[in-house]
Image (cartoon, rainbow, N blue to C red; front, side, top):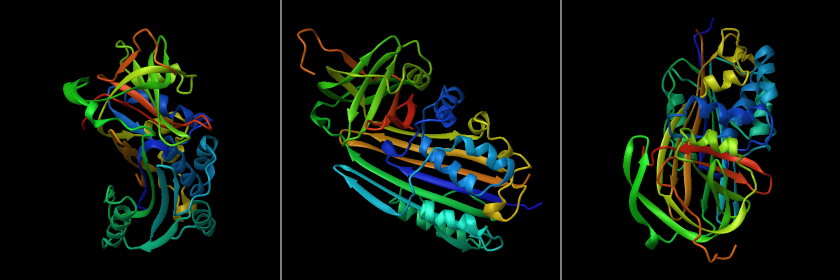
Length: 366
């Protein structure tokens, strides 16, 4: 047996377009997390989950890989790059650190380089070299948003991906129209700053609640959902209503709070419910990555932070898993959507119909 820690750190900045779920059982991630964390604010990245599974599958063998493989969705080959489209800027970078005491197989290193554009570094975790190198890389790649990741001197490998997304609203909120108002969150009443926009927007109102879309540069948009007051689980209700259900143009008044939210979501139970069980058992086989087997995953979670203001949206999501031994204004009053209580959101690519990011906000401050 090998006393070992394997950690994968995947960090996504600017929440808006860094999740991509379109088909397959991994689509259930939102539903599973919504049930497990119904009473919490949370922000999850299905794409981060998907990338983590791709790397885990590439580094695994046998039953471990067979359980992960059916959940994988296609991803574009990645490299350290920056893409700019209008007021949207995205970047992605990946690096892998492996203990000098262990050797991954050449096939894994080739996939890491060619598919993920990942540099591979050999480090000594016992003397702190690995921790310093990783902290420096994370801080540089995330522009100081992520500065460290937890691991022990027994760490065998760390895989980190930092993806960034920076975007402003296609039509920004006027700060002069922002007013103070109460937000009735899970913890009780909070003072909120409600931003206001009144114009023709894509809108839907049905038995589940009210839905409205706010656009970034094409094809990115945030879809906001305000459930009926009887709903105790905004995201679950949103998913039931259909994130990509048709919206119609209508003149709407939208009152949206500035949001500064953080969450940590344990994904072990979600992964197990999706069929990934051997990876968390003593029979786990990550020998392709580590050169040794029987090193199960012991931790799998996402840290996230989301900010919404008059200019746009920003967020940080860090996904980690570790392995260890043992229209026109109407004559009638327009509908109003006042997000002054818990709500759900999703970021989508309108051209592909993919859900890019999803979560629920029960409180607007950490």
